[in-house]
Amino acid sequence: MKLNLLLALGLSALGAGSLTAQTNGHSSATNKNQNGTAATTTTQSTRVDSATVYDSQALRFEGKWGSADIIRGAKGEVVGTVGWFRDFDVEKLVQSSPRAAADARTFKVGNFRGSLVTTIGASLVAIGIAVASNNSNNASTPVLIIAGAGGIGWGLNHLTSSYAALSRALWWYNRDLAPR
Image (tube, rainbow, N blue to C red; front, side, top):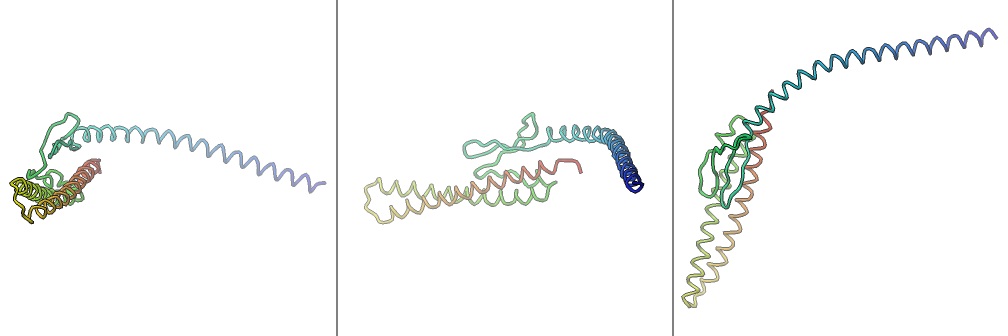
């Protein structure tokens, strides 16, 4: 019987110690939470500053027929126009981000190649149609038209991939606007 009493007292002491530890843990969690609130206020002011920087410095592009305007900030200031045979230095614009600069180089190369080949392809199609309209029964007419259509397809594919690289370049630039 004494053993049962001692066992019950021991278990109740362990239970009481456990409750005390939980209460102390809760109060330290409350203190940590109060300290965390102060840290959150600091983080929130940093977020406001970074949001202001982002709103004024972030880049985007808006496409038009055959070109795109690169726009800075929420106000919509146009900083450059890219497109067929337009030589705006996107790489210099996004040079603060190495990944963005690499994608800007990809855009420049792909945009030039795509513009050149698409223009040559369109010219070949136009020449092929002109030769065909003169009632000249020439075997080169379908070859010109088919080669021109192939050039247009190849060039437009490169133009599309170059605009994807431009989009990535602007995304990397915007991502790196965050404070370090």
